[in-house]
Image 1 (cartoon, helix red, strand yellow):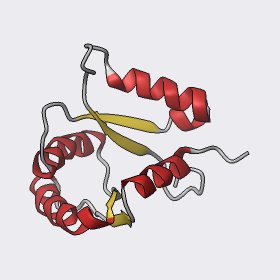
Image 2 (cartoon, helix red, strand yellow):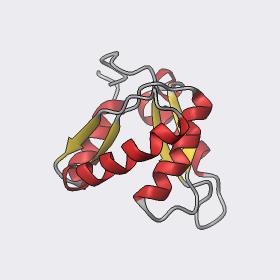
Image 3 (cartoon, one colour):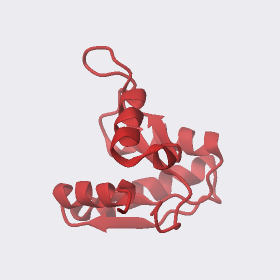
Image 4 (cartoon, helix red, strand yellow):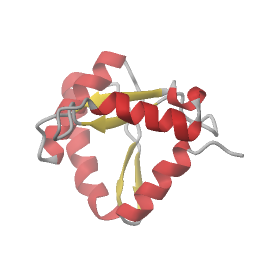
Length: 126
């Protein structure tokens, strides 16, 4: 999406700290920058979602991040089997904060396919 120009930014949901107390966002940003370059890494946002254990909680936590950045269109990328439920939860949660936010849902076949799709979103063309 970044390479095609269909998105200006990509946000990742991450916990604040690892099991060992290290902040995740700087580690993830460094990995993306090393693997895909500084330009792409500069267009990433990391939204902290520590302590969530359900789609409802994650949608609520990420809604605050979405509102903070004043995004009006977001794309939810999730597995095919989870897309219907996740889409319903997100469509109920987002309007509570901002009814003008638009939410297309993008489904992928399975978690392995989702990782491939995320890699394609961030992989710099050679």
